[in-house]
Image (cartoon, rainbow, N blue to C red; front, side, top):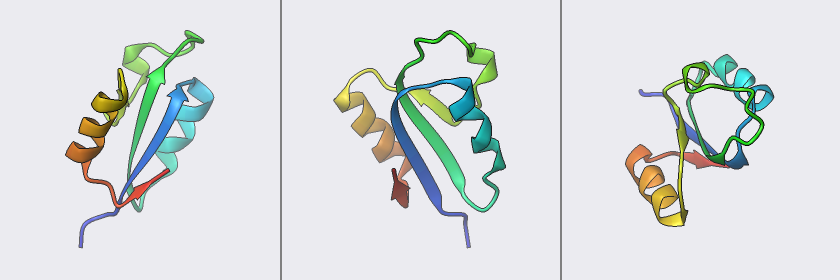
Length: 72
């Protein structure tokens, strides 16, 4: 049985929101965010499962591609 897939959708991305995601072991976690205005993370500091969306249609396409079991 594969792990459940969990998607978190937020407007902002910050280091203190990203760091705890590495503790999820029993499910695959994706974080979809709109902007990162604080400048405390570089692209190298983000995991491959943290993705920026540009507009609602782009968000929908990313969710459809990921096919999550849970969306928050």
